[in-house]
Image 1 (spheres, rainbow, N blue to C red):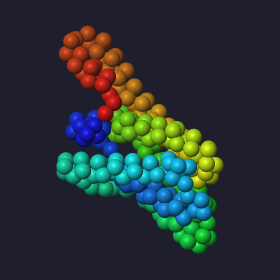
Image 2 (image 1 turned 90 degrees about the horizontal axis):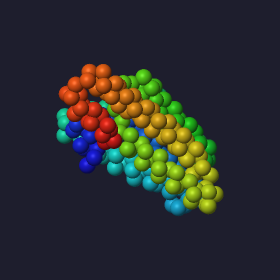
Image 3 (image 1 turned 60 degrees about the vertical axis):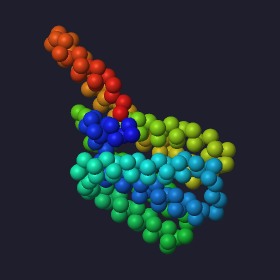
Image 4 (image 1 turned 90 degrees about the vertical axis):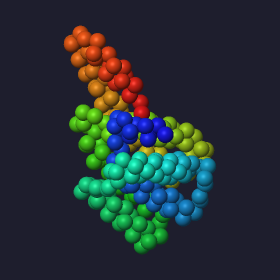
Length: 209
């Protein structure tokens, strides 16, 4: 519901291609992990919870964009290359029959998939991504670290080594943009010295979608 409201207010505009790409990589990662010699729902809870979360987020984004008449997908060159890389990782798995090396390769490609979004957010004046979503994903990864250590799950180690730094950096970039927007609004309000800026100021401070 909060995502629907955020989309309706145009405060955020999640990119469908980004979430499709993430869904593909999380699904492939889960598939490879399930073919490993030692599968543990508890040990790699981060991966399984990420799969549930990413599918629910993608479904939400699709429904909202369909309702708004904006349901279309456009992959940029880097995203297309990452999809190709995911296919190569799967081919490598079929040839080598080594799910762990294929899993590591897939996580490296997934990390590269963040590149386009990071570049976009680094120079953006407004954020198209809701910080709450990424913050919740990051929190889930931190909680999942404990069972991974207890079970000594090397697949979970690799997943968390990729997921925690990349997600934390996304939260940092989005928060940076939001803070800059609030700072700019505060400066404009006190510079103008007019009460007409008060409603805008209050609206900008409520920046969590």
